[in-house]
Length: 344
Image (cartoon, rainbow, N blue to C red; front, top):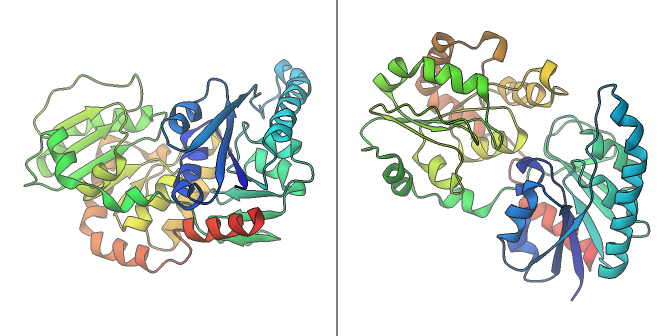
């Protein structure tokens, strides 16, 4: 049986798209995953059947000027050597990378092995930019016009379309009589969003039942009728199925999932001062096509939040129609076909 290596990590956005490909790959190939020793990818991947997880030491790439940067070349070389040993042992037919600092040493180590990169954001991340010169194919989720790139859409989990609305309503203790607002700040949470939501609860719960995924360690402890909070959800498709409108960050994977489901949403992207600006760009792309509403964090307040959510819910038919008209959203099958061609 031919072997395929998947890699990517650091955040859930670099891992879950890989997992979306498993139903297409595991019946035909022996699938291995190379991740970090202590990252969240280990927990997510080892929970899956028919995938062999391997650890390598990894070094996070730091963009700011800091003395720690002086150690990066030495630590990266150590990571590349560890990846080379694994590749020699596994002997894969192809490597598929979703980016992140975990993936870079694997891509650099894969000499004479085709590497297929996939970029979820509108603009490539640092790891993918560094690995791009060595890749056999560069795939993108967005139709960004990058030179020598192929737009496929994003890898989306099959379970995304099979959510159980009743199960999520039961968890939250909601009757289903009011529309549901789902709030999610991504795998790491979002303090600014959390604070605005709790500040607007009186207005929000007057119209919506609010399901709030706060992120790890961010529970408020608020007990209020029509409000439910938990840190994160392993059953996100159920929560999406229960939602009538969603408040989220601007991570590419979340936005592609919301668009694929046609869910009206308000994105509060992480500001450019706090990131490389990918969430701002991702959100602007979909907003320019009428598929989502954007509320910049600089304008975020309880009143602005309430107004944006109310407006998005009122425009739900219009937003859903715009979502359904977008090409290249769910690219899972196309990406699996490309990997299969390289593996065979």
